[in-house]
Image: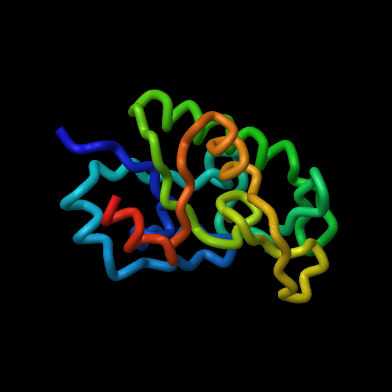
Length: 146
């Protein structure tokens, strides 16, 4: 039986990103041969539509470019992601880098200028706090070789 891997649906080609696009990665075949993939989009799980305004973390809050505070939706989505990971026994997650929800280690700084800072998205932080290893798409080789 293969290990379950929680994965951002946009990395699988689902058009669920804020801009209605996807960011598929080429290593999906290799990942699907090694893991049972459990796709999710925390923003959609939190009740946000697709497409939607771009959002960035501003401290503990998540705010859309328009100024709308969407912290509660991101928190709901993170809780749903954690519940899904726990239901399937996921010990690792492959999430979209730099996302205010899924980013791990580096996110945008909240000024909507493209400036990156150290930090985690809401979902990545919650998963990590519950012992789930979080990887970004630049870490796929590491994930496949673990």
